[in-house]
Length: 392
Image (cartoon, rainbow, N blue to C red; front, side):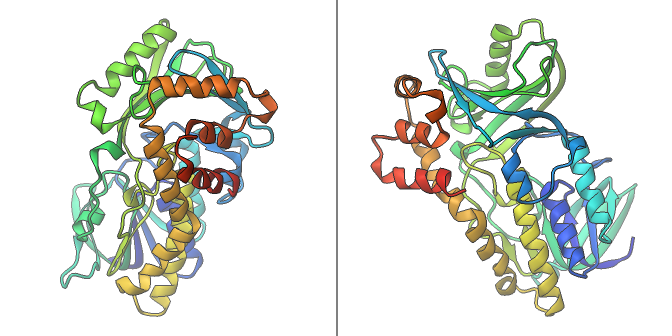
């Protein structure tokens, strides 16, 4: 470890790994800091990703994939199942421990230095401009300088706050999430399941994501507005008790997911935010793996150019914010408007939507059709639905 680098990335998840990799590819020295003892552990993710989305950022490797998904089922509040065959649009269940580890390994092959068990507790910013980080590692404290710091430290990100950025989020947009990996259950591994309804997951949804026919990630996210009345844990335990009474719990993970639009400011002098730290999560699904990697690639490239030009000002780094908005941010704004309307639907509305969709032949059912049907009373949103689901 040196006492200075061109770029320091805080956080070893997909967004941080990809930012580090792409900065280093462009010729700058990069240090990646991960607070946990091992990259990829603990897993704080449902681990599902679309094949198409993943291929936009990296070529999938067989060792990353624990299961291939061929369709999904939406379960209405009254219990009816609406199956959707995705055709060629497959999904993957990742093994995030292996996936994250390999992404960081790819970064190291481009010259990135990695330090685990590195707890960043402050920024160095003597004149308001971020100039590095203060880190505790193996009981010792270090000040490490950098031209640019990239904060990829997750939803609880402190890096952005320390830099003076407003990272707060409305309670209704912070999903309270709990997931248990269950064994000794029986599921169809070809399908992922989404359960809707106020009695199951108010202001969100419950998911079953199979790893194989006997093991699945079963979890839910509920809006913070409802979590104060009844916890995500209570909802999930009730569901598992009804559907999988003999299940064994292999792993439990809890956390929050920022299902909002991207932060208004994701850069400052000497600083950029990536992934959950910047609220770059799909507002409806809560998925953020590929979007974090897209953002990481953009941020890493902009950081390298800014360092080469000897200009790490907020104005220069704002190129990253503009490129992100063009790539994904604008689409997330549309998705957020759709989410706001969908989460206001009553159980009766959702049941009526299921009625309509079930009358459509399976081969003609699409996710876009479901949202258009659910939002038929909101004609102003139909164009947003088309843009979100038909142009990707």
